Amino acid sequence: MARSIEYGKLMHRAMCGLIQSVLEDVAANGLPGAHHFFITFDTNAPGVAIADWLKSRYPKDMTVVIQHWYENLVVTDEGFSITLNFGNAPEPLIIPFDSLRTFVDPSVEFGLRFETHDKDDETEEDDDSDETEDDPEPPAPQGQVVSLDKFRKQ
Image 1: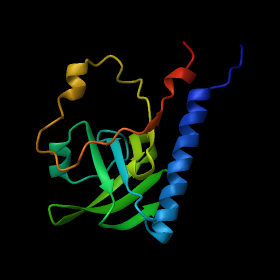
Image 2: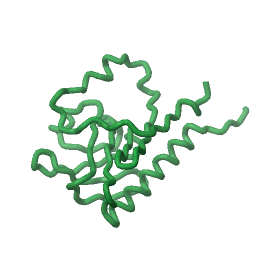
Image 3: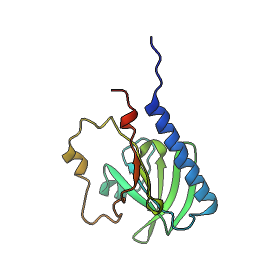
């Protein structure tokens, strides 16, 4: 059997390692300067733990902002936990790295997008069904996004 290099998996692991390093630094030293993060994750992914009311509001994915107020940021090899403020109500979240869809730091126009191929069969309409006009999270700004598609074997 022919052996091949799995660039997609290697790139995914490298991107998770980069985010882990950034979050470990923030956990130890706080956010430097104007840096802040928009992190979108799959709310149905294994290991994700969020309040029931958040899960009801964001049944597919959710974007959180790490900027002005956060507490208890703990980073592990598998992901991170953090307490964020939702309408003056602190809520703990557990977010595995494997659940991430995007990571953006708009202060330096940096972004990563994790491709999810297990949902390729869903229609565009299904992907947009979670959007509501009163979402408290602002949309992630455009930045430099690294896509794994160009590295995937066809």
